[in-house]
Length: 248
Image 1 (spheres, rainbow, N blue to C red):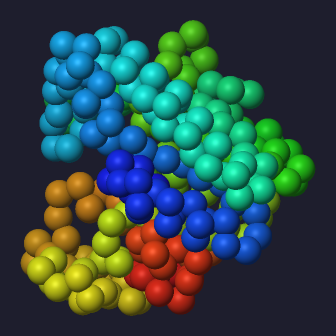
Image 2: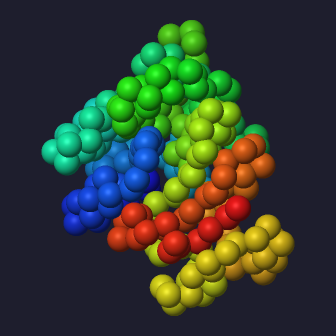
């Protein structure tokens, strides 16, 4: 779930309602976006961003842990509990669920930014099989006592890949648009079936670019590793899997 959904109270309320309407077992990985920047401003800190990604120095990591691992995570858990969904809010460090290594971006040092190396699918499956909905903040650990911040889309893809060895997994990327748009100025120009050949053509024509490329690269990587389907959609369509953009 994207940060813009978290930031908007009405979108968040709709998201929770639609998520609870989804049939089957669920797992939620969330972002927090500008909420972290707002808290950093109040603390007199500036979060540096490169290509829409934060450069996570030690002070920035502390803010992200407070907002993502605390405020947002527990708010989501409480909203789910209010709808009788038994949720458990965690980070990748809890139960040793997800370990990562530091990653850079080309020659750029991104600080305490993590790239997933291992997902504890056994531990997650025990929670899921017990009827618990894990709510995971985009924070992992390095196995050496250090915490790392992770890009939500990539982290969700890695968790989906790991769970695909045990379950029939559908990965849903939920953000503010109805799906992948053929025309960014037309909110209804949704590409319903995004085959890889069409994706590559849209990428070459720069219809798809910037941060959205990463989302789709993660989607295709998930498909290549056993995930049944990836859906890109918005909160209003979440419980209607026939809508949105589909990658199979």
